[in-house]
Image 1 (cartoon, rainbow, N blue to C red):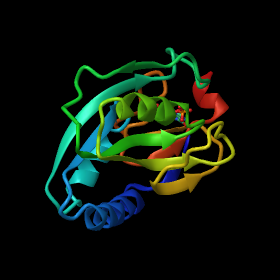
Image 2 (image 1 turned 90 degrees about the vertical axis):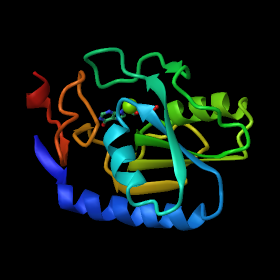
Image 3 (image 1 turned 30 degrees about the vertical axis):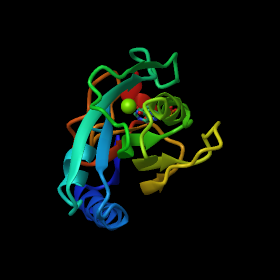
Image 4 (image 1 turned 45 degrees about the vertical axis):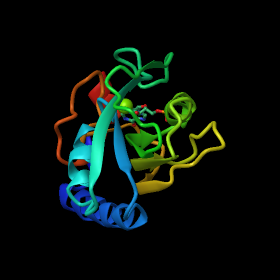
Length: 173
Ligand code: IMP
Ligand code: MG
């Protein structure tokens, strides 16, 4: 395991993203929707640098069934979601990999008639997307490696790491 992005670099970039997002949503009814579980740290950091009033809520999506680094079937849960009708929604996730999770969530959320929906992710993994959509806001483009930390897990571990680290084959054995 080795560090790809140290904590201080993540902090600087997330603060910068927050300022950009705050300016874009000035005077608008912003609701941030975090995708559980991976986005919790990103949402907590991001919201503190968005200097316009906004609400938060969460939706659930899990694409990895258990101890694997390959996409399994996707399950989505919207039972924790606040009312988003007429609101400007920013959907926040930890990483954009194949893009399937965000596209599926965007489709579902549109049926609740928000005024607008954009997406923000900390990481955008390159060379993996299978969808037309791209994230509206992203922290870092990263190479195609399996990463953990800052909310991202492997088999539900490592989410607490303050940095983003690459898991190597020897870590998985
Ligand atoms: P997508 O649907 O393929 O874009 O996958 C998005 C979801 O897969 C994210 O919310 C993560 O939970 C998970 N994921 C994708 N790549 C990684 C990774 O490198 N480390 C940990 N989780 C990942
Ligand atoms: Mg996730």
